[in-house]
Image (cartoon, rainbow, N blue to C red; front, side):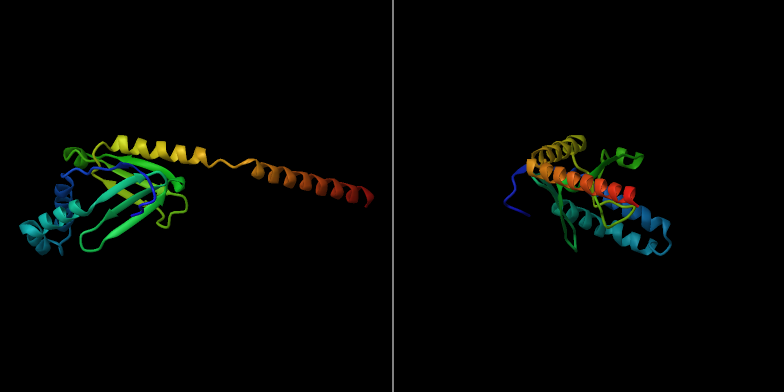
Length: 177
């Protein structure tokens, strides 16, 4: 992950995420007939191993310009989302997550490539509301510092003046016809 950016907040993940992974996969194996033989292997130790490895490898931190996220057990994924591209942060709770005292934060960006999905799903962050607020606050700071300068406004004024002149010329031509 980038060393140039200042780390503002690093997310702490709940160890209960290991139980969540174990139970979620066990549930899906149970409802699918093909998964029932795999369920035995999953519950006898593979599930605990995968949950532990996932918990050890998950990392999310907020920098002054980006939200950086790493996860994975066998295949590692690393995502960096610029804060100015974040469009929506959704906070998700359900009875199963509440039982484990976990929350999900879904982060969607402008023009994300996964329609109907999210660009980042953070499960099990401790103090989810605080982390969400820190992301929103830093995004606001970043956007307020990058407002266009006067040169941009002058360019818009020149364009508007040119368009007005074109309109006036078109009206003169229309009147002569």
